[in-house]
Image 1 (cartoon, one colour):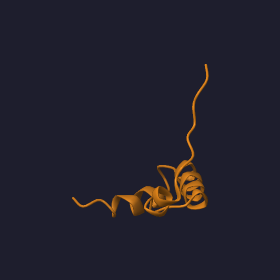
Image 2: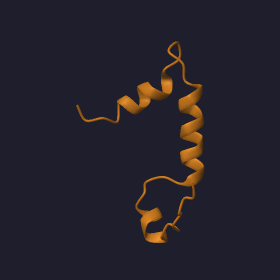
Image 3: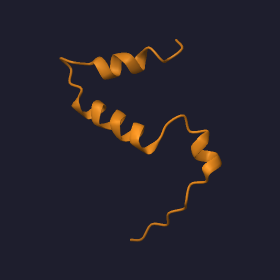
Length: 50
């Protein structure tokens, strides 16, 4: 199985509200967050407009 990948334009990246480094940081925090320590997900929940 092969996958095609397409380069991301600078314009799209500028509008993405994140960077590859910030994404990786957020990802690592998300997988380290446990039920006993939901700080990452609690912070994310505050961003939702209920």
